[in-house]
Amino acid sequence: MAIITYEHQFRVRYKDTDQMGIMHHSNYIVLYEMARTEWLRDMGLTYAEIERRGIMSPIIEVQSKYLYPAFYDEVLTVKVFMDEMPMARLIIGAEVYNPDGKLINKGSVTLGFMHAYTRRPCRAPEWFIEKLTEYINSHQE
Image (cartoon, helix red, strand yellow):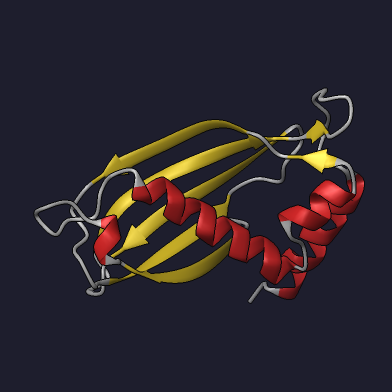
């Protein structure tokens, strides 16, 4: 069960489709990033702020499973969620739904934490955990 979820909407643009009018598979990973970035912004953080604090978050792994196609001009809902608090890694799940609410794609992105200057792996910074905990507590029903 997810600790927290966040939803972001995206309209499939013409440039994102192939000749058949179907969204190209590579764009799903872009959707994951867009939703993840907006979730962080909603939490009160941006990647720029995280990096100013000396932490980078490289992607370690991406998984994506394609269930049904998305088509030009559809408005998709991308739901990102976190099932466990991060330690050395932050795992963000993702689900993409079409306008009818049908799950068309699911996946996950695993990010690490790394000191920006030394480029050495580290644990999730305490200030990040505190911010995340505040956000989770403020969004529980």
